[in-house]
Length: 411
Image (cartoon, one colour):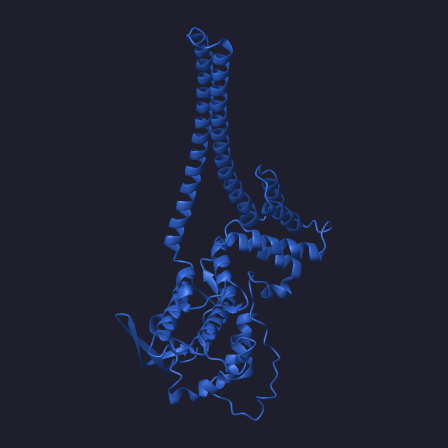
């Protein structure tokens, strides 16, 4: 196992609302080297690293002059004592060799955006892109213990997609935006799932209450109609009114009461249908995502009484995912997926985006997963890279070893 070397790293001090940058010398390893000897890590360490990297970049951007780091990749991240992460001090002369290494083609192609292959752009968006690709490489290089839950994988995929897809309307603009959406640790996630279960129980109780109120209101309306009929006989004996006037007044009153009751009944029915529709969609998403039973998910959506455009397209997507591709052309499915993205009932609910991403994944195939806005990306295989620019250059530090480690992490 390789011995730890010394590196000049950034030490950022936060005081009040200001950040100050200094340099420190520590013993450690580059992240890409560390991962070579640690293929399995604890899930909490993985989440802790992602949070540390977000925090370091956020504080770096808040330093005087709002600088950008520019070289965010597994080569510029150092794993120190107690598995703590640090950013290399790229301004140190001792790091010139590593800086030269990070300018190599195989590093640029994997951790720089396509329109910034020569570090010509210095911006927060480029740091966000490098962060997303670094997290993507980290997920491909290790296995967590315990394994990531499906909802955690979905959130990490969406976070990476919003980092690397600059054309998306949902792309992150600042590092702070990432920290607001990053999955929280396991205990708080369990608390959230418990809260969701409690909410579903309350919804069921509320629906039962609405049904009971509806039945009670109907009984009350019938009693009122009976009382109105009794009033007719009393009004017949009032002096100054003809029989026809008395009957017409009573009928008008009954029509007003009936109209009011119909309005109240319709309002209660719409409220009940809306809550029932939400619960039905919750069940349909459960079958689609967790159980991958697309036929059952489609049946649930098709039986929802309050039909809407999204439900019809979602049912078609379930039919396509179930393997019944004959009724559809590739253009039909593409249009359905585009409409689903635009018609989603709740844009903040990542589960709808996940269902759409699964549709794109099946439509375009595994080789094009990274082109979709929401699907899981894989770092491209960088075996057999062009070495024309590397011939004649002096090997620097652990150059050959580091390039081999990227290939191993992807495989």
